[in-house]
Length: 168
Image 1: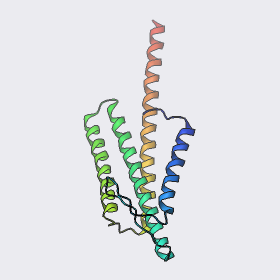
Image 2: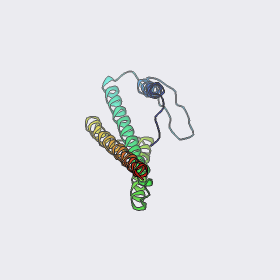
Image 3: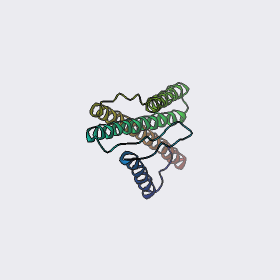
Image 4: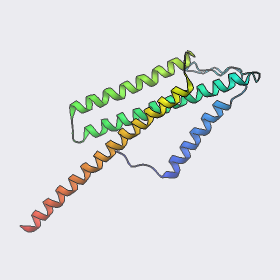
């Protein structure tokens, strides 16, 4: 596992990302914008607040699903890294497959978003995304614990070896 950067930098990036999502969610009126990936922003009317509430709830659910998927990818990648030291070919294949599956989920979500084919129940989707994210975070923490335990075992072995060398 790589060491984390300074906490201020991570917090700054999170705040920047949150502000970017907030701008997208709060976007009220925009002319159609062409982009290279086919995503455009349509015109929104101020007329119907019920639709606005549904749209915001749907966007929150979508964002929660994206974050949960990214957290799952992070956990699967951590498993992949853990399987590389010590090398375990079977565990690497399983972890690699988990990364690929999570990337497929994210890709399917993107395709549904682009086709505007998101049939989301916001409340259920938010809860499921939260559960998925929490489970993925637990997997990541378990991997970190295993990694730290492995480091402790290595250092204990080194200490024992040094004690034996000193005795002779």
